[in-house]
Length: 260
Ligand code: BGC
Image (cartoon, rainbow, N blue to C red; front, side, top):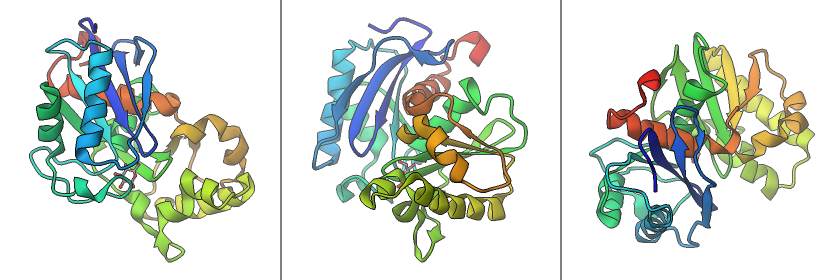
């Protein structure tokens, strides 16, 4: 059961779908999170079933804001027009409508990197940072969130910039590191090229690196040679869940007073 001043967040990823109730005042989980593996064929119906399972498991009550972080650009009221790392049958689906219908609740979907950015702005490494922050998530893909003076510019897809003639995320994501069995140093060289590209075009004041691998930042940060300050995401891999819960509460005008 999820009491008031809480919202529920779900993070849909390439390998796992994770959910937890979130304490919006503290910006942390209110209960232990549950992770269910992403269905091998990650079709809309299969993923929606897992979302329903998570809501049922936590007995989420009607009226609780429910946010979902999803790895594609999201325009409310419009069907998805791009899908990099889940089943291609998502293209053309109105994800807010589908998940709401399948679960019988109002579900609010936000891009996963934007969710992470929102969490870092409100509770983590981007809190009170002036200027332009670029939050990146390194996982199956590369997600990006642009935050200017605390305000998110949603749906940037800078993981798909071209680097070395390839889609940058195929060359530089954490999945690319694992696939190619790259040493931290070799991966660091690729990351240097990627972050230098972002520096050149955006002149940010701070980079945040999130995603599961951010807990090993001491291993690869020393190999990233750039002039912009770089920090690990404070909320590490929890940011998608916390940020999507925040997003849903914000949309529903249900943020606790000091967070509104
Ligand atoms: C997707 C983005 C997403 C990122 C991280 C990319 O492949 O296009 O929308 O934010 O992966 O999951």
